[in-house]
Image (cartoon, rainbow, N blue to C red; front, side, top):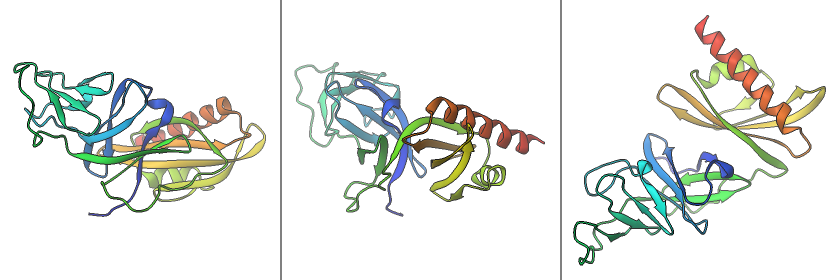
Length: 208
């Protein structure tokens, strides 16, 4: 298994008290932020009956499975089983965790124990996350000024100025998702419109 950081979203995609689906390579994850802002990422499967934990809900510093309501703390350990309120859950009942950190407005995932820090994206600010029904090669064909693989960057013309664009690529079974950042001086509204045009052009190219 390759050990590396993969972007799964932007910080503003996940407010306090929310949970969302994430992915590290082919592994589906539940990524959530507690009421006080603490991040956690686990395999998207409740240890009880396999329900997706990304369908659950956050209460304070815990995440509850939507199926039978089993409650898990940010360390992944089961804290409460509603059907057996007097029982102290065994330590063996634990969601399988991944490393999840926040840097430069990006949420990064990696296997537990990752020694290296996530990529540094200085002088860039997050814009938005977009999903596309095409592959990376199509994107690079539409906009040849961009280059790279997991992290693609380049200077493109937006609103009459050359702006630095960075796309953090997250492969999906039926396409890709990218988490976009731009230079600090750029107009994020214009950048967002440029990104929409890029997506439309790439998907039209695939459909042609």
